[in-house]
Amino acid sequence: MKLFDGGRAPNPRRVRIFLAEKGIEVPLQPVDMGAMGHRSEALTKRNPLRRLPVLELDDGTVLTETIAICRYFEALHPEPPLFGKGALGTALVEMWQRRMEMHLFMPVAQVFRHLHPAMQEWEVPQVPAWGEANKPKVMEFLQFLDGELADRPFVAGDDYTVADITGLVSIDFMKPAKLTVPDGLAHLARWYHAVSGRPSAKA
Image (cartoon, rainbow, N blue to C red; front, side, top):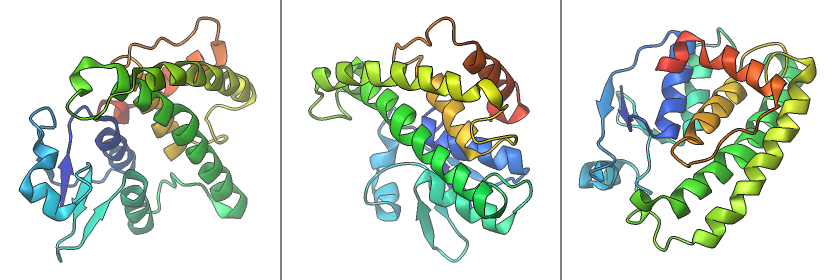
């Protein structure tokens, strides 16, 4: 088994944090995304979409997509549960994981991909107006999330889950996207301090 890893890129980082929370060690195969290593022949054979992370199992089976890889490891190593517990718990985590991806992670990514000069070779064509259009979406969701975090420690409830991982990585991704968390979001700030201080955040 080996995990083709993209370093600082947000999706590979989400998987590394997930594995660190589980205490699972998987051999990493570094891929230089800056040098377009994810578009190499070797990676394209494993994932024709040429995206990372890519998990290759011992029998040659290939898994792609961040959450699919995380779910695979959750099934193998259910403790600690990062996708929730019980019918309601897992549904709440699924709801919040999807919200964090759709309303925070993806808009930040669109700002970065369509406005950052380094992404000109990746996002063809770049559409600066689309990047700008996603900036207020990020800010609106952060305001919403701050209100939600007023009465619970983590995004989906009392326990740290994959939804928190997506949130943490999304907010850290705001820096290269040249976005800043608005002042005055005290509940969001408290949550971010807690999740960014976990040892897994350094994975």
